[in-house]
Length: 308
Image (cartoon, rainbow, N blue to C red; front, top):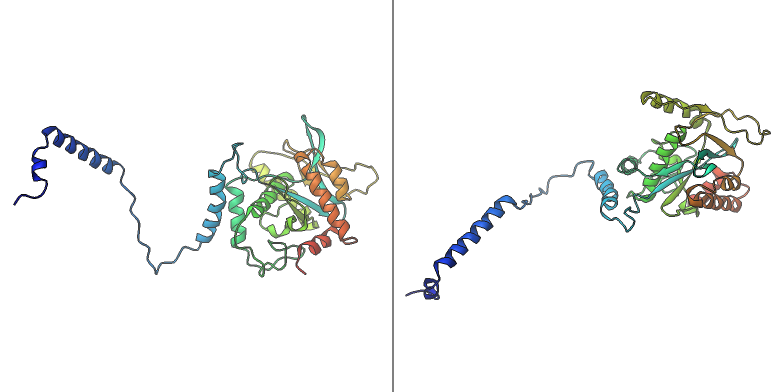
């Protein structure tokens, strides 16, 4: 008994069969050229490598910067910046002198743009290894207590900006906290920034940090065939006592530095820096100091960023 539709098949023309065969061959050809990627079974007994947490934290930062471009052609992460409000008990707040043609003589606070993937990797590595007790005069990553009790679980923009701040501070002055990011205290929780993807961090300039600053940067410059002069701070009023502090500044960006007694004075000096946002940050920091007077800047930051 013939099956249903047999007569219809017999009536098909030779041309129809030729076209059908040709389409089948084309399908098989493209299938061989672009094979699908097979799914690999995962063993339930296998465990992820130790670095999987670090890799996932790092990729979560780099991927958005690569894929989510805005109308301006840059992304929020690519536009990220980190700056230091650095203070020394004997001298005051650190500002760097610059003499660009477009702005003339002006001052800046240390810091600058994030560099990817370098700064994101540094931030993720710092977070992954944040298990040791914090050092004296430093704070936890969150700025709210002992590091082992309030450890952040995810790298965020603030952490990348902190790594950026450490790298820029080293490149601009030789002050090196790249392996001790806890020294850079996030100030967002204290009401200082962030402004337009710019994060601010307090740094207590200890004698040890300042004494070590010229050594490493000079050795690195020598290996790259660069030179910069060790400079003392500007004695701008010709009345302040000479400060035995030297920093390795220069390399076309800065021509000197100054230590000023108040955040308000520093705010006045940096009005041409970062579109006025450095001034805004320093004024916010001065309000923080006024609120916690008569505490020193170090103790005021502690009071503002630690939990009760």
